[in-house]
Length: 430
Image (tube, rainbow, N blue to C red; front, side):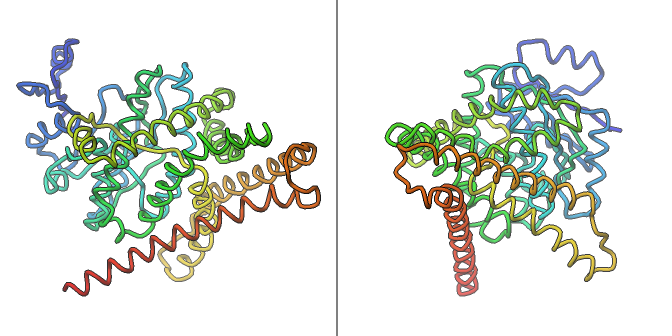
């Protein structure tokens, strides 16, 4: 049971303060608008005396047991932050449907893998539970980036703290319902991610797994965006329209986790009909991310954007090389669980987790096989593609896999080398 509910009325004009006071909660009103969500939260932080602080957005509602579920994860003293599963409150428009698929996919597969390796990429700002003393120790929510929740999460790892994800603790925020608001949100997310990479690039090199997923995300968000926006259309125009299938080649990576979660919620049809919206959202996100990347690389624009940024939670849908990396991580889980069970008598083999993630990964791989076979047949019948008939199947289905694995290996090796070099430099300075 909450000891106190504090509402920060940061210059609202819709009678928020009056309504909340009538409900018996504590209302804090800064003298003037703080300019950001993080600023508003920091304004109230000094008045919090309870050992735990639950941060929740004004537009977010919770499942009736969500808070209790989060609290159960605060079992260790070094766990300072716990987040839950996010599902859009409304799923009607194209943009709400795209976000709905993104969340189901990311929280069902990617977030679960991150959680297993004890490195959730981000503790969602719309609904997270913190240790109050930790928040005060680091000065509250940072104002230095557009993604204060990502900044907070990565800072915790660098301080040797832990962050947990509880899939059963579900919250329902209101997502952008039209292009105008979605564009503004994606812009903030893109800039926030890039700013955090720049800010923490040295620190996260000392955090295993986190450095790997961040590096892979950087590749996917930049190079994959160029591929989506330019390479595929050029190949489709100059060689064959069949190259447009490249937009659907990783469909299993999107559809399988989404439908698994949707089925458990009795929302299979809603999820199935929303997948095309996610494909549109992904292309839009690619354009916005590349524009943000260019602006962040220009020092003057970078400083301006940081000052006027509105803080929100940040996340990028993973596919491409990133999807391949998560598949490999999922395949490793059974072997790691077996090792932990054999070497630690107190560890219990987590059958449900292993079977769920391995089942999702296996189904995704099976989906890839079916799509590649379909692509092979289509390319075999297209004489405009200058690939010999004898090697057509091999070239189309095997080469992309080999190239993707090779790229992933190169990225991971480079990251590990950077971490090794930085570690040696620190020892040398000491």
